[in-house]
Length: 116
Image (cartoon, rainbow, N blue to C red; front, side, top):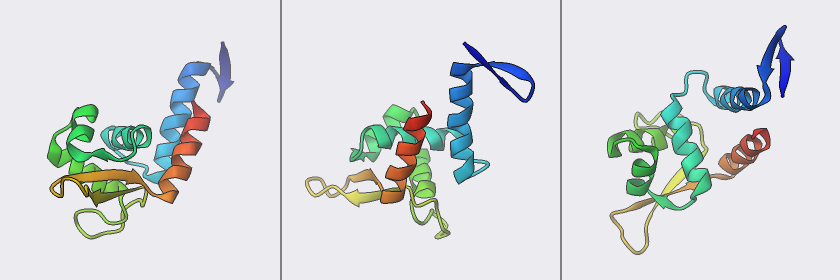
């Protein structure tokens, strides 16, 4: 099934994908797709550790850390981030960081799910 958008016919499934990407653009108009993938992975597996997150997102540990930082309250340059994720030390393995959604991140994740 298709719908019309700005005078052009667009398949409904593509329209959903476009709306999903537009939702991320509201947060950051130049957000890299890997950052969105990191967010969606954490939303689907809250409490995931950074190593597993990097593996699932198919990115390096360094990229994973940067992306989590940009989605957290403060990024690696101590500048304001997006406030969607937070990381905590794993109580059982203190070298590991576990990544969770913030309240704002949970709201954003719910909004994203409504678009799918």
